[in-house]
Length: 106
Image (cartoon, rainbow, N blue to C red; front, side, top):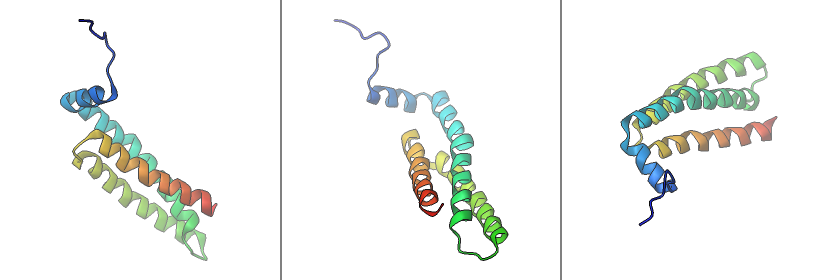
């Protein structure tokens, strides 16, 4: 029988990630640090551009407050989900929605 030297399919790689606590924790920490921060920045920009306020600094202030709340919720989400893939999708899908909203408004 021939062994595949280092070649893993996507399912085998996902299973290896889920069963290795160090890789799993490292990916979750990276998603929590960088993914949730990026999502919060994108949300703040979308909220600031899309909120209907006559006085723009009010819109920016509210957008930043909402972004802080979203940052907190997304960090909790990353560590509360069952798999790393679900955590990544939980950040990527809202980021895509905020990007589309920002593109449509700006």
